[in-house]
Length: 163
Image 1 (tube, rainbow, N blue to C red):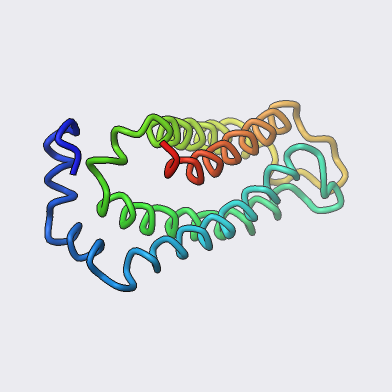
Image 2: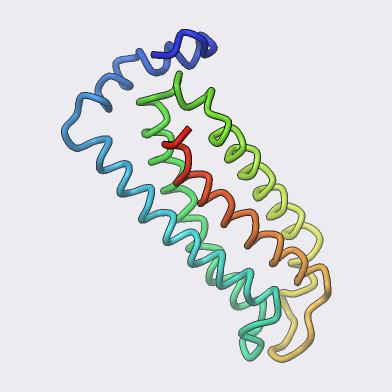
């Protein structure tokens, strides 16, 4: 327990749920594996959508790609959230003070803002666009920014343990 952490995170880690996660033979390990598997699902779906926005897979309509892979990305993100919360609760007072974790949270917020911006302003222009038609520049920008953000989030996630 880190006594320098805000009281809410100390209490979360000291809770019966936090203790159960740390003391369980399988729970923390399962959450860790689930987090990696959820990352693979999320990253794969995001990569397909972002690469399409960047101009690849032009023979497939962008609307179809977005509709199909958005669902997969949401399932992956839900898995990341649930397993990440489990991992966080077990070590909340230590992790919340970790600068890499704080940067990861900021990047996640930025990634979600990018998605919201894209969904509101750009996606409506793409839903009925036919295959092989050029995409607006804002779609390309959103795709490239998204790939960069989510790769950085993954890198931060793997780096947290070293700080």
